[in-house]
Image 1 (cartoon, rainbow, N blue to C red):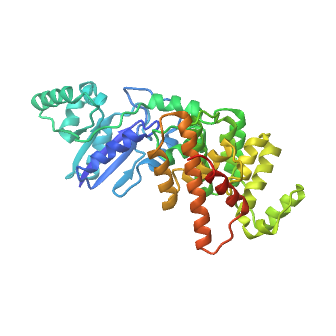
Image 2 (spheres, helix red, strand yellow; image 1 turned 60 degrees about the horizontal axis):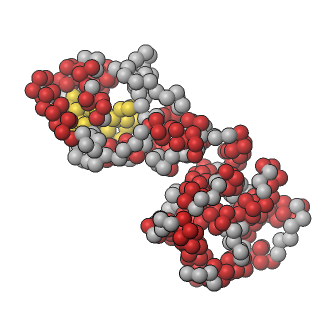
Length: 397
């Protein structure tokens, strides 16, 4: 077999690593073995994620056909040397071909590696470059080939520049990073890696949803939080409480209709016949009550939870942000959601004031789509949704 060993700290695995994996698949391997490092001799890991956690993140980032995940390096005691890893997998398939992935820094320092000459006898080096390093890499390749009869492949793929240190710093500030796939961000949020819980208040909300939401709903909820923060940053709105609203917006989504109705009536709320005809709207109201009661969220952000499925006349900016984040968050697979996301970010103006008007337009289009879909399906359209659509339709275009 042609085997590629794809090792690294993966602390965390980011878009740059994903691009490198794509480049490796251009070499037509029979398998790619992903190997999170144990204790690498040349650099210290951040300490923010344990080995099992880094493996879980790798599975989220790299899962595809022909990818195999190995904990061989993780199980080694003491420093983990590439030579030992190579000889282990060579014994598994003595007649096979082994390629060893190297990043730019690793390749340029290759002659400092433990038993590097033996490594060159066993494996072909597959090297990922950085922009601007092509000439120095070509010189290094020529020298290794001349001095040691090395076999070196320079991967023909434009790299994604990403710094693991900067990503961890971003996570500590935002709770996630746009340089990571949704699945990796989700694992980080679930396990609190790299200071991602941010503060005690968000930590309490996370504990609540981790205990009450099923896997699919939790993935969506964390996606809505990330999207809410992105929209707040684009629109110069504070994300602090609204991100908590995003985390809580579907807290009661699994409740039976009867439980929703009983809870609302016990809280002194009226449940109308129109509400009963569109029972999916009830969970926004019940979740809003819990957000206020248990977490002290103010009326503005609780109303964003309350109306996140319907909208309403006079929607506030938090209303619009949470409504739209719920629609376009990146784990949504419905075609209409993906188109709305692509349309929004593809046409996003540079001017902050123009962005507010653009959000209004995109929310109105989303409401138009909701009304049209429900009418086509012969389902009732809540008056709150009609009111929100008509209100935004009268706004200047």
